[in-house]
Amino acid sequence: MPASAARHDETAYDRHRLRQWLAGDARADGVGRRRLLTLLAATAAATALPTPGPARADGPRRASDATIVKPLPPESFILRGTNAETRWEALRGTGRLTPNDLFFVRNHTATPLLDAHDWRLRLWGSGLRGAPGEDRPVEFGYDDLRALPSVTRTAFLECAGNGRTYYASQQGEAVTGTAWTLGAVGVARWRGVRLADVLRRAGLSSRAVDVQPRGLDAEYVSGGENLGRVRRPLPLAKALDDVLLAYEMNGEPLPPDHGYPVRVLVPSWVGIASVKWVGDIEVSAQPLFSPWNTTFYRLFGSAHPEGGSAPLTRQTVKSAFELVRGAAFPAGAGQVLHGRSWSGAGAIARVDVSTDGGANWRPARLHDRPRPDSWTRWSVPWRPVAPGPVELLARATDTAGRSQPDVAVPNAQGYLFDAVVRHPVTVY
Ligand code: MTE
Image (tube, rainbow, N blue to C red; front, top):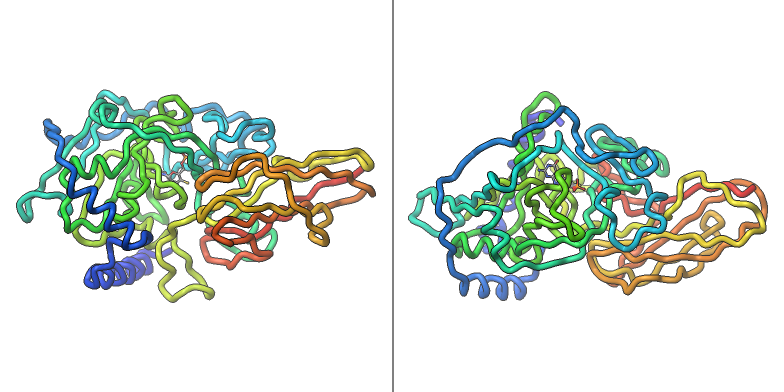
């Protein structure tokens, strides 16, 4: 997108947030007002933690030109530029949690190699208490965060563009962006501190409306324009709700590719909100914007408002088979098909599977107690009859009543694909 269009988007979004702000609604974006009042009451009761030491702006140390540090064996990953997609067939037999070495990686540039001992998190901006106009940064070291009460939470992390390739292959829509199939998602058990606790200790002011975490990875250049470091604002209500500053993933320190030493983890929202290698957080009394909530991660196109939709928040409903595309099955032999479904709006209520291209459907057996923010594993028995090509389909419905449609509403950047994916196999 040209720079002028980006500026237009930013202006439009800024105006929208400003209107909300003037109406007293900016802080409630995405979270109910009653919930917000509870959260703010808790904030008012909190105290500030003394965090001595000058603010530092050291950049990351870089070890090599490789964009991803961990091994990416071809049987587990599909390489896509600076990113690595998990192969669904590699998840067969793994548990509910995606092992760290199988977890997809989405890097705008490259994984920086950071040292937890040098790392500092700086909070700054007009939404912190202090004399008007005073720049009053507050710093936390790694040990400061580890000393705070910790929480553990199981949550999926999914790129907003997961499934993007099916806009083209199933619906004939030309979209831009990484051609993910369905492997830009994983579920992990995250441990860290509540962002709310850190904001309170930093001296959150009653005027704060947005917080914007920023990564320590290199500045991102797109279409010849330097967009700066990856950063995306969060409305205060979400920041105070269930967001973590995570330092552990599945019981281990965060791996370098997933944000070591500390990342933001925003449950149920598009992956871009979960900023990795977080180095600072702006806390603002005015709505904030960045290219990641204006130019990117909104819906553009004829089905959407002129100037784009609101910035993306929750993820959609999806399902995937733990099976390679084009798998071959002998006719007449009993099989069990396995898969997983998930949603950003609630737990999975049911999954229906078709083994004949969508003519007939039957309910899958759910293997997990369905929980919000996680996926549910399922299976169906199948005895293929006649040799030939077959399409397998799975359609999930969540507890919020959202079900996967046959066709996803297209948007120029191919976000939030939610339609039922047709999975081709061969019976021989
Ligand atoms: N944070 C930083 N600093 N840099 C990035 O490139 N990518 C975002 C998000 N956080 C990104 C980032 C995107 S688009 C996604 S989908 C998730 O991180 C991916 O997290 P993962 O690589 O740990 O799977």
